[in-house]
Image 1: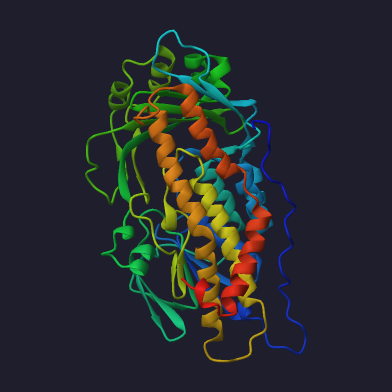
Image 2: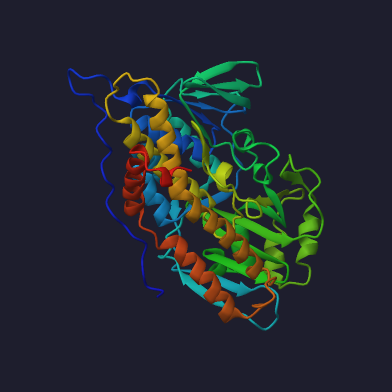
Amino acid sequence: MMNGTATQNPPSPPLSTSTPNGTNPALRETTSIAVIGGGIIGLITALGLLHRGFNVTVYERAAKLTETSAGFSFNAVAREAMEYISPRVREALRKVAAPNEYPFIRYFDGYTEGVSDPLWQIPAERPDYHGCLRAAFLEALGAEVPEGALKFGMGLEGYEEVGEKVELRFGDGSVVKVDAVIGCDGIKSRTRQVMIGESDPAALPGFTKMVAYRAVIPLEAVVAAMGEDKGYSHCLHVGPGAYTVTYPIANNTLTNMILFCKTSTAWPDTNKLLATCLRSTAQEAISTWKPDVRGVVDLLPETPNKWAIFDMSDHPAKSYTRGRVCVAGDAAHASTPFLASGAAMGVEDAAVLATTLETALSRPSTGKPGEKTAAIEAAFRAFSALRIERSQMVVRYSREVGEMCMWQNEEIGRDPERCFQEIWRRYCDVWEFDVQEMVESARRECTVVLEGNPKDRT
């Protein structure tokens, strides 16, 4: 079971973006799409659509591209999905990411004295993570976006479908009319709130009663605290009410370090998921743990960032679309980070959206009223139908993995064998996934919806 590898199929070439002589232009050539949010998934989605000849503009609330200095990683499935989206996306990742060079991802007991061997380990080749700094990847993606396709200082306030257009209202008072909208505006998505209604429980994420202290630390300092064996590898230390994750990034010069903790305290402001705290707060959470774990936490800056972990597990959205608007990435299915697959789900979303929109809008326009509207709605319905089960599975699984690593699951407790089996099963459901079949299913689903089969409408 532990020697398998993720599915690696060669990507299918994109459909032709040319229009035969003597015919009307393809619908996509006259289709304007607004992507709300200039984060990593927003830019990946935009690049996939630009690659297929759509007229795309990204609207970002901030004054420039901004990301935290935290690290993250993409598994082999996500990187394969990037190949289907656009060569520019894959090339952007190649510039900034590097594989994990250690052969195993290991889980240690960070709490119990006298237990030094790994509780269990996972072959690194299974997920085949490539890690990088979030800010570096965002910058690399931004460099691939054509000039004029990215507009800053544009915070979405609301929208309305008027005739065959969607009118977007922004905070600066401007109004923009487009054919379709894709909300990639993150866990606090304004697009989602307007789309499903602000009174719907799924409009807002829920607090998981978990927080995270995150930092990027010089690798040499982590090696000094944990030793070379742990310092140069991807490892986790689990224990009561908390656990740590450390792994090298930036070509083995830095370490991405995260301390996750359970909390009984309500998060004070749901509009701000990031707060500054004292290092002593994190140190107190693991004050009775082993010296090497305490030593790594001691490397946090004096006033580290403390992240509230919210997700969509308690009230998942029933659909990711309504009319000519859809949501993707965290805006659709925000997840905790315990499966290291939240960003990967957003990449898969982008691959499916590129496929369904291309399928629905590649035929020549006939000039019939409502033709483009019907095609966009069909593409979005197909996207939602295909993505909702898998993405929400990951949201549930991720929350469960976090609870098990913090010894909070009452049935499993701190039993390493049972914990491994449960976590391994969930990981395999994420990693053992056929991207090529996902893309082909997206084309089939879109074709079915386009042909008007009522049972496939959502």
